[in-house]
Image (cartoon, rainbow, N blue to C red; front, side, top):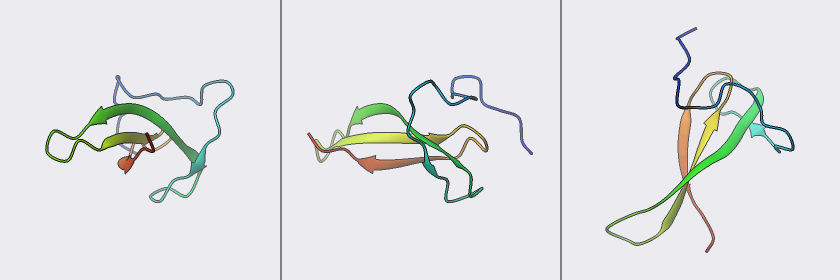
Length: 62
């Protein structure tokens, strides 16, 4: 297993509602940061798995 990335969470925060990670299959995928796409102006949420550190971006409702 690769090393954990220090600026990403490595444990589930209290009260988190994790989803199943598409890579490792564990219930450890949590919403992490928000950003606005410069081209489309859509708000995107970065989700991170606290187990395998995979990230994915999803559009966030405004």
